[in-house]
Amino acid sequence: SGSIKTTWALSAVGKKWFAELDPGGYKRADPFESLVESGEVTLKKYDRPSLLDDEGYMDTSLVGRSGSGPARIAHHYNGWHALLRSIYGDFMAALRKEDAADTFIFDTATVLWDIAQNATRERVQGLGLSAQETTDRLKRLEYEEPNLYMSAFIQESRARNKDLIFIA
Image 1 (cartoon, one colour):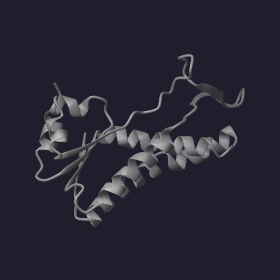
Image 2 (cartoon, one colour; image 1 turned 90 degrees about the vertical axis):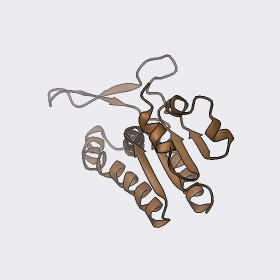
Image 3 (cartoon, rainbow, N blue to C red; image 1 turned 45 degrees about the vertical axis):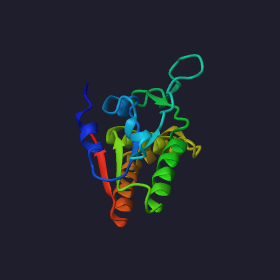
């Protein structure tokens, strides 16, 4: 059922802090959440914001000038930066508690990186720049910033001598 990587991550020795970013990922490996009940795992579940508006339509707009190349569809991102701050804040709070966990697990790393990228897009969109300025700024940041966030997770766990597992 696609849970072997999660099952392997949960077999690490000691207490574990588990960030479920892929809905149902944890339950596939521990269907009765017995590791959570025993206190061996602290489970944190995070829901991603929707890219749909209240009526179920994609929240987008066209950007670009007529006659100056193809128009692009720009998604309006909302809630991603708050989600990333919540994940990082919970992670740091658990890292600072000496006995909270020996191993920190993110299921999945791809979703975490996607959250960081969408948080960057949301932040840049909120600057109130023109469409061209937003595009120029995102060209520089939309890969650089998410990589910096991922590095921060790695460096913080390394600095505290904790194991970190990013499930692919």
